[in-house]
Image 1 (cartoon, rainbow, N blue to C red):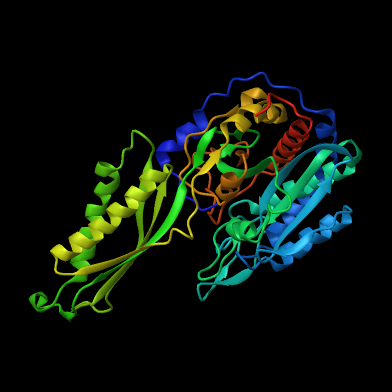
Image 2 (image 1 turned 30 degrees about the vertical axis):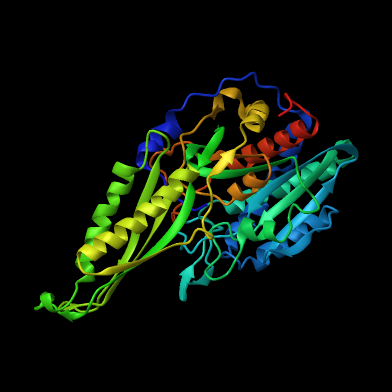
Length: 440
């Protein structure tokens, strides 16, 4: 998950009231299978955690997933969008088609948890040697989906319909200029021969206490777009700025003026938006005004029209503010790399809410605020009605408001989340395939 969480939203995560609904009971087969598979799911998660791999580098991870699926009697397809793995569970009874998705990649983060199975892996990221860690919980997602697959396969004779298992690489973003992730899986025809009626996915979250589930109808996670900007001036000696054009001063003015895009031009009464400059680089010596300044940043939005308006406003600010200083600007917004907003299908969400409540109890399922982080699960949701929910990852005795966040080197998953995620995915699968709840 590409992460950005506004601190003002924390109370929304922690204090939100449970969602009202008449929750059904946990299915007996779900309770039995989740208990029986608990140790195996934990073992899978710890193995993945100890051997993380970066985006588009998930070689061992893909091999281990394929081995586990073959041991269940399935016939996985490997090498999907790089190192992704898919498999289809054929139920013994007629019924609908659904898909379940887990992401596989880790982050360029050096682990600081002190766990006995902590990662000591290293990898190369943007030309540098870095530590590698499952700092976002993708190890848990893979283990939960493997456990779900094992449980469904064991009861295949009673299973209606078909289930597509999607183990997706490069959710955190393929390193440029490579392609990857959900976009490449879909380009390669993921749903060409198997078009599911619904896709389900989950994400563990440190801002939620273990044992709780957060789910939101409609927009849930923001669109994420990367931009770069080059301010071109004219080099001169620092003692005689009038002999050149200072791109550093122009860049500072661009950054300041760009803040008015969200605060004064975006309709925040409609949906929130964020515009962040993440890095700036210009010059190498204290007394030389350089030719150029380069900047990069991110844009987060929920509304498609607002997204395009922020793009246009940023280009406008960069061009005209730079021109006022005698400089010029080149702005690139990498729309093809970004994720759209993750939107949960309202009818599907309403239908499956009782299933999530059955997994943990109605009082432990709540509606979180809009999340400024992004997910390429959003691309599946554009193709098929989908439901994406959050599973609490922070254990008892730790305040979720101050717990190390996802992407932190100290991100610490309470393994209770594995049991919650397994029960939730299993209950969703059985209920949907058996037609539980009103038709969407």
